[in-house]
Structures are given as C-alpha cells and as structure tokens.
Length: 193
Image (tube, rainbow, N blue to C red; front, side, top):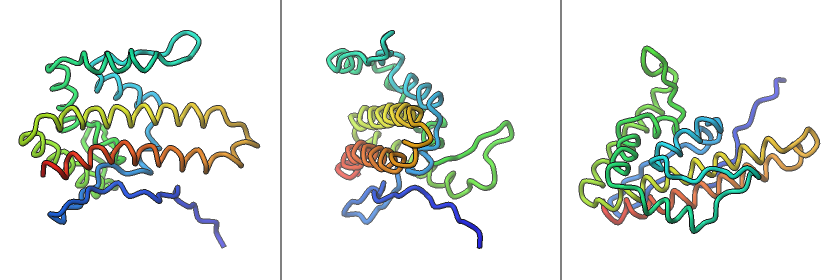
C-alpha cells in the first residue's frame, strides 16, 4: 500500500458569490502557498509600485502608518501598471499555479490557465464599471504576497521537531489570512458586477 500525499487543508473557499450565480475562483490556495518567497516579494514590489517599505536592518517591518502612507502615494500610473500586471501579466497566473516557460504554458496547467484567464477578464470588466475596484484588487493581491512572505519566514524558522507539530497550524492560519484578504476583493466584485 502506497502512502498518498494529502493536499493541504482548504477549509476556506476562494470563490466569488453573488446574486448573479457567478462563482469565480480568485486564487488557488494550494498554488498560492507554493509560490516562493522571492517570487512573492517581486510581485509585491511590482504591485506596490516600488513604494512598499522594505524590512529594516533588524528585520522589523516599517510602521503601519508608513505602509499606509506608501499605499496612498501610489500614483495613478503606478496603479495602472500594477493593475495591468494582474489583468495582462502573470501575477494571477502564479496564483493558480500556471507554469510559464519560453514556449508558453505547460499542458498540465490547462484548467489553472482557464481559471486565471477568467479572473483576469472579470477584473478587467469590473474595473471598467468602477475604477475603485482597481485599487482594491491591487491591494488584495499585494497583501496576499505579503502574507506569503510571512508564511515562508514562519516555515523556515521551523526545525525538524517543530515542523511536525506546527506545520499544519501555520498553514491553516495563513490560508485563513489569505481568505480574509480575498474576501475584500470578492465583496467589491460582487457589489460592482
């Protein structure tokens, strides 16, 4: 009997629910957790327009007031570029685990590719109706990548023994954080779709 790998628990549903019976998955929880810290950091920098405060030498994050100020300072051009990275770039693709190579997408990710394309189209359509959705979408994905970087920091601090006891809890906690962040975008889409 072979031991089967079990996927991480996904008790949260990353779906948009509205009265129109439109259900669009905004991200794949398992694929999100597989994004490396370096890639998450790059996407976060792209989405913040380079204004996200970096870690200090002591490893502590900048104060929340500085972060809020940086978010307010994102100019329309930076916001447009960040939003285009969601609708036309590979940020949403990564959130679904779409693997890109020099020749294009790999065959095993056809379903993920279709889901990512659907989300990109939905974000573009909703933002045409209400421009404030752009800021919400960019902020949601930016915060999601910050959560991923914190997740990787927590996981890298585990040793063999603590891994056995804390892995599942850390994973579930971060999946809940992601779900809470994406709920903000889900509500904005449902209100404007």
